[in-house]
Length: 176
Image 1 (cartoon, rainbow, N blue to C red):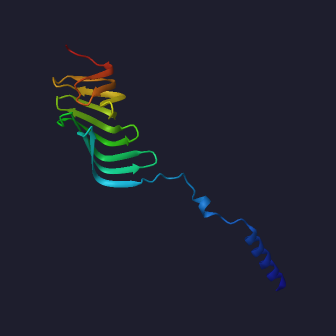
Image 2 (cartoon, helix red, strand yellow):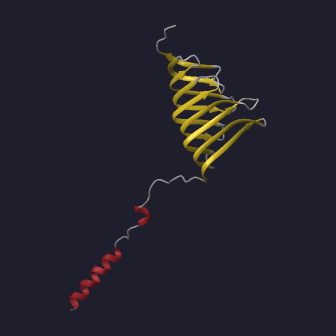
Image 3 (cartoon, rainbow, N blue to C red):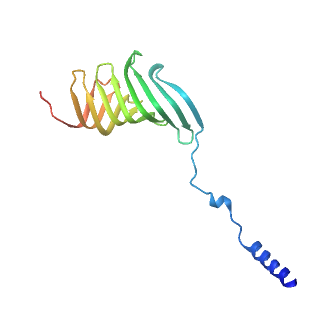
């Protein structure tokens, strides 16, 4: 009986001396950025010198205060207005990111911009510089004009009216 007690004591002693399993270390993973704010069915109004310049709508928004960014997802729509506050073009995208420090919006995935002049732009990403009031991309673009021409290329720059635009590396064939 003494041998059993000594054996049990040795086993208990060895078990108690082993290093405990640290659950916190086992479940460690990369830190997850959690948003400071989340909103659904959002509507953001942007003004410049007191005049309406844009209205942004999205089904979902996440705001991160640390890096001054806002992420928009699901049916992002942005209406651009001229200095007379008249609607001049509309941007559609699957998602977008706003950098509040430099007043840039980058639209991503299935980006379409329709202007009131009849020009339509299709691309994967598009950036809007609010200060300079220009839109641009370095990605492939397809543009349909008011006279039903279709133009292709890589890289694009334009004013928000889509009246003064250029394709940086155009490609394609024309019958004219």
